[in-house]
Length: 155
Image (cartoon, rainbow, N blue to C red; front, side, top):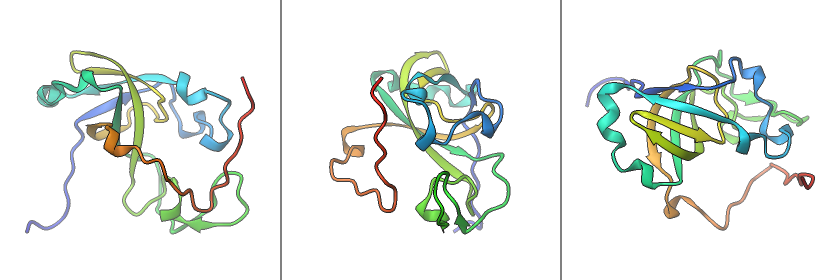
């Protein structure tokens, strides 16, 4: 077994959001904010052949690095919550391993560029992997732990 874990980016996000503060916390985002949020993922040339067939999927799973997260914290206070939670019970970027996951709608593939919506990532975020979102990924009986279901106002 080789010591250590080594990951290298396969691409980079191009987003209108330059700073983490440019994105609202999901619980407080205006209705349909993330649905309308668009950008691209530029896959590096050496990984472009790995995109073949991806255009047939409506959604993709993007694994990425929280490259601007700062120090890890084991207890975090989610936005709008009074009580601190364990980092593993949150979506906080301040993790021991700063890895994130987003499910994005794939609008179109143009060569090695993926046009996406549902973007919740800042510009220049390193993309570590891309996977198709499949029926197997959808679960009908999901529990959301401490997170309260917030009703959004009708549009």
